[in-house]
Structure formats: structure tokens, C-alpha cells
Length: 291
Image 1 (cartoon, rainbow, N blue to C red):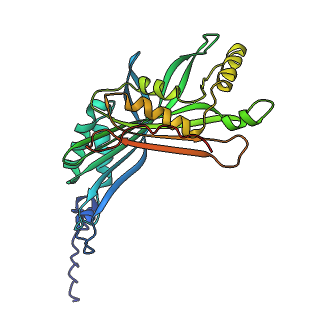
Image 2 (cartoon, rainbow, N blue to C red; image 1 turned 180 degrees about the vertical axis):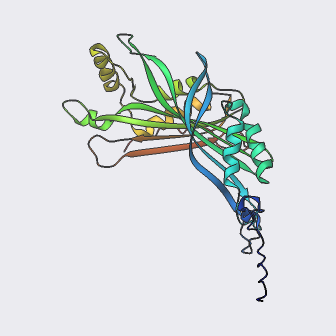
Image 3 (tube, helix red, strand yellow; image 1 turned 135 degrees about the vertical axis):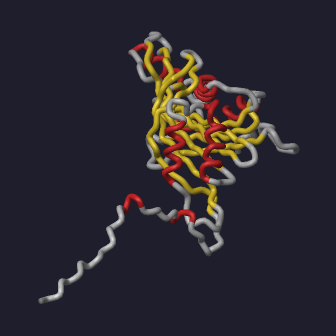
């Protein structure tokens, strides 16, 4: 008789889902180089913004989120940023910013956390002569960080018209003019409405920009700009004068870029002032005679 072969024993194949997964991000890095900011960029997400005239405004933002990373960790946990956004679903607003940053620090074991939020903001605006109403879009920014202290910067990008004083002086007919973008960022000690900051900036160009203009409005803004010529230097200096006079503001930066209509390049100017520090010169220089 032939001996029966014993059945070969094979251990069952484990279900991959039941195996413990290694956390590669927490593995040790030996290069001894900390990272200042690591995280996720360009997330499209709904937010709620305080509206001066309508209480709140719903909009969709592009969001960047970062934390610092100690030198001994290989990486951060990217998915946790999205988890935190979902926790604050429909609550991503100015009054929740510090709490969200604190949660980022705790969830990711970080010493500092940062968030940058850019969003379109709409204001109803009347045309200057006809009074026709339309919505005007402005690009706004929230930039916040939390380490030992909370820091917040409000930014607005405001389109204006600029008309060249030199072109007006030299030309027999007309003067070259163009659309410009003025970017103002502020830190403040008391709340500032986005609408109020935009209004300050719009007054620094040759004329405001409108989304809807009838014929009588076009005549008005064209003549207004011609009677109010501004260099890019004039625009940032006028904004500086106004922002220095606002006691709520503790720090600001102002930039102006003219998309020149007769040149291949843009014209640019910028000023930054810190009103908090002792010994900081916040005076406005007196104009000198042109030679």
C-alpha cells in the first residue's frame, strides 16, 4: 500500500486591511533641517465673510494652509489640513480664524500655523451720473498666523483708473490712461470693514472703476480722470496719507501697478509703514521742486 501524503499546511493570507499601517511621516529625518512652512495650497472652499450692508456674504475662496515641521520629522500629515477645513465647514470666518489655527497646531503637533485665504467680494455700486446699480467684484485676502501670538492681515485689491500727468502736459489732445490695481494690506487694533478700506483706496486713483456705465457715466469718469491726473507715485503717497490718519490701523503696506496703455511694461510703486514701533518715522515727505 502506498502511504498517504499528508496535506501541506499553509497559513491563511492576512487581509491587507487588517494590517497595521506604518506612519512614514513620523519616521526620523537625520538631515537636521527644520521646515518653516509645509502644507497644502490652492484649496477651493466656501467661506462666510462679514458684509457691512447685508450682515454676511457667502463666497468661494482659494485657501493655503501651512505649519512648521521640526527637523527630526520626515513629513507632515497633509490629510489633516483637509479634515480641519471640514470641521469648520461654513464656519471659516474671521472670528473663527484663531481657533482654526490653534486646532492646526494641536492636530499636527506644530509650533506655528498659517492660513492664507483669497476670495472674491461683491459690493453694490452706483454709476456716478445715471445712478445705475451693479455688483462690483474685488479680490480680498485674509492672512493669519499663530505661534505664541495671533497675527492677522486684511488685504484688498482695488481697480482704479490712472491718467498720466506727463502725457496730459505734453499732448495737444488727450492723455494716456489705463486701469491700475492698488493693493493695500493692514493690521488693525479695531475692526475695519472691507467696504471702508476699499472706499479709501478708490479715492487715490484718477477715477474709480465701475462694472456698469451708461453714456452719461462714461462722460463723467473720462472727464474726472482727465481733471485728476496721477502718477503711480501719487497714488501710493495719497493712500499713505489716508492710512496714517486712520487710528485703527497699526501697520500697512500699499502697492500700485499701472498696466500702461502705451508701454510694454507696467509702472509700480510701494510703501510700507509700521505705526506701532517707537522711533518709526511715519511722517509724509514734503514734495520737492522739480528740476
